[in-house]
Image 1 (tube, rainbow, N blue to C red):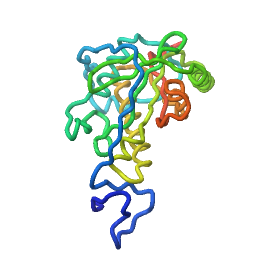
Image 2: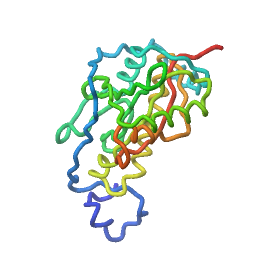
Image 3: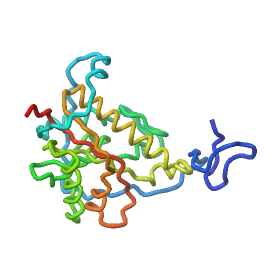
Image 4: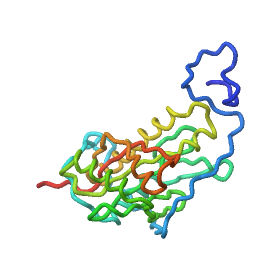
Length: 240
């Protein structure tokens, strides 16, 4: 394990490390969490767990499905509440938490947003700390329409809702120097956890090879510090 140092002071003398290796800061840097523009918050009931199945069967069944129809908002919200649940918190202002997906420093800088509705124009954010689904205000619609069109071109038979992962680099930067690789590692871990949980709930799921950065622009306008780190469609398998 590297010695805990302040990111500005560089690595200890005699230590071999690349410039991109993240290093924990001795003292976290202050930062302000993003204020999300939500119009209402829907408190969710405790999630109903998926049907009982052994882990080997979930591993064997997990795959990417490209023919998907919409599921109900209630079903998707329950799945998200389970997959993102906060099991415990600790640290100053409960900054760290234990959840189904692992995260560097237990910081969980990646937020899960749901784009839903027949026209895919309603945007929600899951708030695991409150077990709530927040309905977000869209500031600028062209980026959202652009993202919808891009996803429809990639997955034309996925007539369903989709998830976008948006990361706040300030969260990991406050605790690590050179934190970029941690953001992408966390995003991958979260995406895989969502995929396994969707399989356990017998939902259809397919990651797309795009970042979803357009959604950050749609919500906050140009210049948002949020970065897109993943998109996936979610719903019920369409046999047609």
